[in-house]
Image (tube, rainbow, N blue to C red; front, top):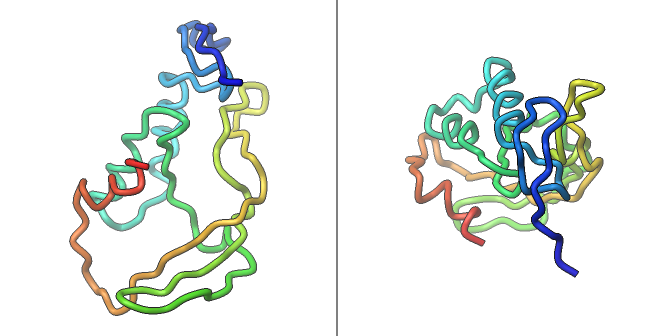
Length: 135
């Protein structure tokens, strides 16, 4: 059964939005992201801008500090990097909780991390960053 796309009105900004399942109001969530931009950095302007341009719940990318991962285990090594399995403590963003003024998250989730070995200054461009968004 697919989720229906029926407009809903955001209780905060009174704008209509279609992603009722995820409670994703683009104007409000963009504002919440922007209000947090000064609290983190990847130390790479291209990556930071890419993360800041997320426009819906399926395309959200956030900078996750290393200490938000637990039980990190190496599962493969080769080529240009090392692959790890880990538990992301908080989990991904689901929607903005208006009452508590914070992101509602899905909770602990399994993730795969990739560390590029021996690369000091990787040339990061839009094509590289968009690779995962295409799937």
